[in-house]
Length: 195
Image (tube, rainbow, N blue to C red; front, side, top):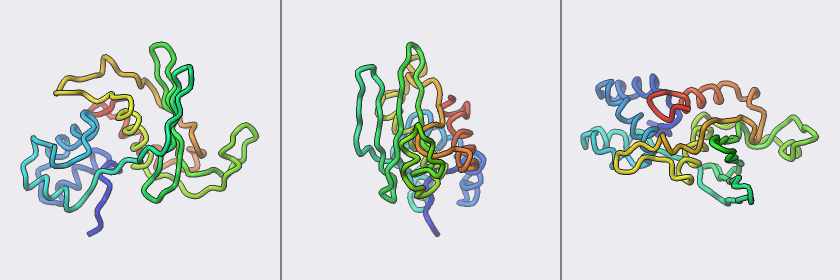
């Protein structure tokens, strides 16, 4: 059985995944909560799940996020991350703070085919579309780096720096519509990140 990156699953898909492993459907919401309310990256730290469930998750899935290759911080507070994906492809993700708003610009492709005159990415060949997990992973990395996850069970929503997402990183999002749609449903879900 091929292990899957669990962050590529919607809540409904996660519930189905749990049922296929012989787990009760409510386990999906517990896992979802750990992933998207607390930013957990280790099944063994999901302490309200029994050891059998954690072991099943470890055997059948994994939690992968892109890794930070470089960070550039501008004088105005804008942050740009060069992120490395599991296949060593590089993408950019940008956070733009503006008053009480914070926008993340996220990528949908590695490279691009459109060659728009105003965009450097257009000079790069299209390597591949990003998966929903690659797209969601960018949001999770930014929340990690901005320290937006709750600590000791205390929600940080009142101190949230990220208020919205713009699909204007690398690539043309409508050329990767299904993955973009699926990823945005995950980050917009009110039981999780709730953007």
